[in-house]
Image (cartoon, rainbow, N blue to C red; front, side, top):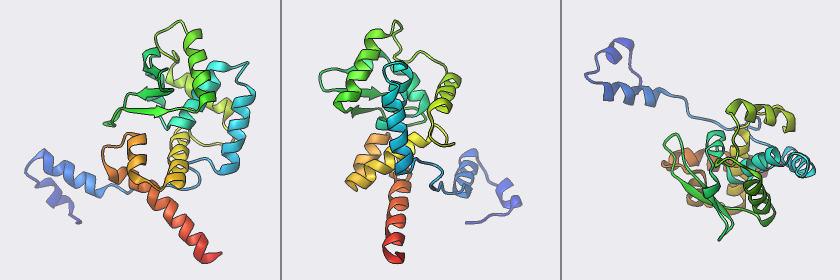
Length: 198
């Protein structure tokens, strides 16, 4: 519903203004520049596993981002107590209105996380700043894509594997399924276009 400036200014209360602003926002769209393509994903895995012994903390942090879909701030807020050794999982405290979630880890990644937990003197699993995390990402990133591309990569790969929108919503901590639909729409449109055109 479009509304001219005068109509917008005449809205009676703040709640109505917020509602109009939200409806005027552009829909978030994914594209190949916002996630790692398969060759980029493989290259990053190779780099991180190759340097895991000599740069353990940083490689473990990036691998955890790639295999949990956690946001940067969520990773930097992880405590040692968030590592569940009973069922090889990590508990992620949601931010930005997201739900908390528990994500199971591959055995090899869980061993790396536990090793980092024992090496770390701080209660935080990764006691570094956001700026330091960005620097680490710039060292290892296979292409010039943002750190947040790891979250999108996790989401797209999980959806392609399961085709389960509800599971993806839980894994990403989304409260609103509409946020999760972005991934389903993108994967579906890419697969259907490829099927029809090629």
